[in-house]
Length: 278
Image 1: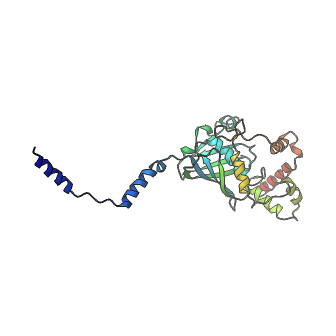
Image 2: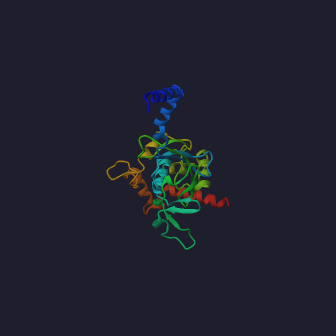
Image 3: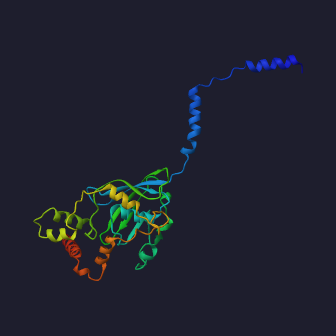
């Protein structure tokens, strides 16, 4: 091939127009490249809303929890968020199935009772956004909580503890007698002329405000819901926090002298009143 032919081809190639690329197009391409890792980073937390059924105005908490928590961790988180005392039986009901502590829930079970599945085998990452299931605490009082999975989140750094970001109102007192007992309890403490007022207000510790909620306190309790042996919070150890004065009070209420406990007397009165309504 002659030099003239090569030169002619080079000139022809240089004469082909090059598409114009604007600065905005270059910026869009650059941003898309930079944000690809962020867009596809997996979720490491889940936002849920937990509310106590059949109480109006609603008692609820909005929680942000590590995505690898299992149902046993979630149980402890709910207990902390609502300041339940964690000395009654509990279970989760998910899609018609029953989850919980298999050994505890099957101890006195009959053949007619539904099978219990291991709560440690289900993690929060197994749910989808929009999932709704139940958490039942205290089979006597029957406190049913609705748990709604609202959103999966990608947080930095990855959360190691749960946190409470919103909520309203105090939960009912333990052993108050369920929804009906709680309604009667509120009637009594709102009326100082009620013949049961003095004993009831003593039973609940001298004061009860159903509208009370200190979000900072709830958040701190939730962050401490799971404890490792060295005192650091971890989602690998489902044991509750170390014992404190409240635990000692609970022990005294659960010992053999329960008949002298004024709270139990009020609970019996409330339950007697509930039975009389039917």
